[in-house]
Length: 274
Image (cartoon, rainbow, N blue to C red; front, side, top):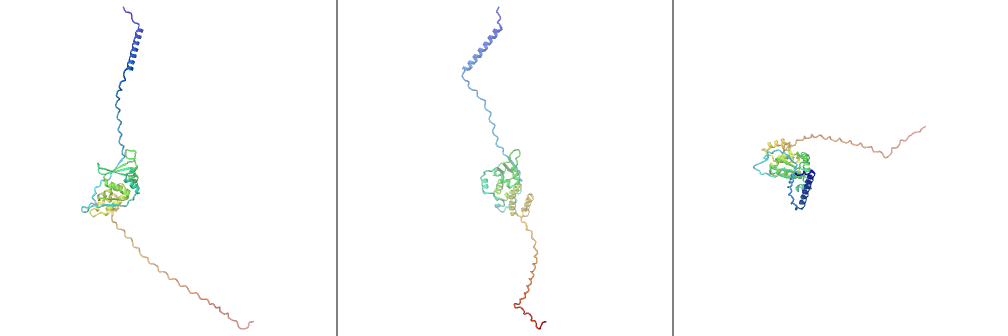
């Protein structure tokens, strides 16, 4: 018959065995070669930077349907020079030509083939109060004024002529169709100087066949130069000549009596006096 092992002896043996196993594990860990570092997890790709948002504002212009208003099948179109605007200093015009310090772009042309035209915001605002309000207020959905204006139904040639007139005070229009397009665009964008110059040029090119459509164009945009292209001056009333009064003859001065230089002799008294 075996004697029972006291519980304290069993607990001590178990503790000794556990400590031995722990010591052995530490020694093996220290003596083992350095393990290759486990490959790090691939870093998440950095989110691609979104392209800078363009503050673009679209200005819906009228689709011009009467571009052939001045078209003459028998005559070749001749360039027309528009004048009457205020020319800006040559230094500012040079900055515009070189596209330096320009802070707004006008986009015009057919969809898919638009061209960009650089300009200065202050120049457009000075030419038109309407454009000044558009370029000073925040674009829809953004916190900044628009830097790009998209002009619908406006050709690239018409946009270039519009900016040339704004900077130089004059421009050359190659075709009558472009001239009609400029009238519509200038009237809607409140470019009064360009509108009046283009209307005067159209009035000089009118014919009996195109005068009716030109009158409709004048009514649509309030173009007085087209409503009466050659107004007759009102005859001034001829003033009735007033008779000039004849001058009264001056009275002749009366001749003064000539004084007698010799004194008259005094009368002598005769006779005796008592």
